[in-house]
Every structure is written in C-alpha cells, then in structure tokens.
Length: 237
Image (cartoon, rainbow, N blue to C red; front, side, top):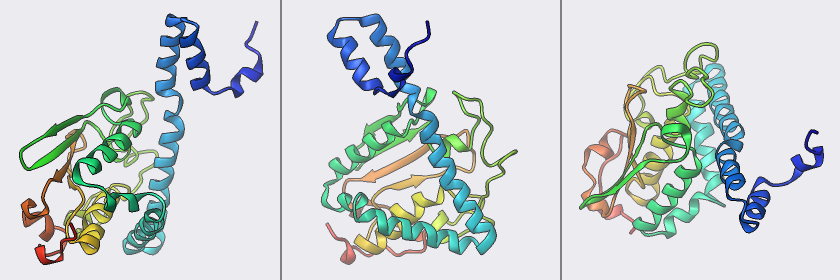
C-alpha cells in the first residue's frame, strides 16, 4: 500500500532522528542519502530566480541598475545577516563562510565538499564548483540541466568590464555580487576586502576565495582591479 499522505508532511530530520534512536541503521543511512538531495531543487530555484531577476534588470534598464539592485540587497541583508561579519575575527569569518558554502551544496556531487587550507598569510577555499554561480556555469551533476548562460535560458553576462566585476567583461550577472559585496563594498566600509575571489573565465576551473589574516598583507592588485586604492590608514581592524 502507498504510504499515508500525511507522512509527507513530517520533517525528514524528525524521521531520521527517530530511526537512529530505534537503531534502524540501514534505513537511517538511506534517509541520509535522501536528505542530501531533499532541498537541492529549492536551493537551485532561488539561485536561478536571483540570476533571472538580475538578467531582466540588466536587459531592461542597463547593467548599472543590476549593480544597484545588488547594492540595495546587500544593505538590507547587512541588517540581519552580513552585518555579523564585521564583528568576527578572521578565523571566525572563515568558519562562517565555510558553513555557508557547505550548505550551498558546493563541490563534486553537489554535496557541500570543498578544499579549505591554511597558509602562512591566508586561508584558501577552493570550490569545484561553487554551489551557485559555478554550478550555473556548468551542466548540473545531479539533474543534468544545461548551463544557465546557454540555451534555453541564455541568462546574461556583463557586456563590458567594470570595477565591480574585477575589471572583466563576460561575468554572469549572478557572479558579480562576489566582487561587489565582498570586495568593492567591503573596501568602502572597512578599507579592505573581506574575501577575495579568483574568478576564471573558464567555467571548468575551480573558483577560489582568499581570506588574508592581516589586511596589510593583501596585495595592491586586489584593490586596483576593483577601482580602489590600498590605504592602510582606512583599515578598520
């Protein structure tokens, strides 16, 4: 007989905890595999939705207006979410972003795995791919959907280079928030980028984030590529 329809209204996490407590290991492991994919469709929908909205704004009103849309979103989010970053030390900031990227379904199999290593002067995160912009630039590993930048969606990329796209053209409208939020707007607010993105024009190349332990160690080029000047007197530590 088919499972009672009411069962579909029960949290999978609640079911999983019950199976573990009852010692039903095999069933619990099967449910773990299901949990790993349960929210994937909704996650991807919201990412694609954001990209589609930015694409529409850029096409109808111009790319500068898409930047304004993202700028406003960041200001709003600062009030309840990103504002926490300014109160963290660098290690806590790295842990904050690591948690977010695990939930972001980054990496092989879209399970949330990525490379995180500590170097002498910085922390490095490597995503192959990241769970949103990176995923949308490739064929989906789980669902086989085509890149959002190609048919049938053909979502847009910048038509010329901007300070808020690392001085590059051809950056997907979704991806430009990494440059605008965490580099351009961060420099304007605290004097230096919170994290630095090494973005490749090749979608098959992993995306890399850099978190410098001391802003004094951040190379000048990471300021000039977004139209800023490195000025340690403006660093808010």
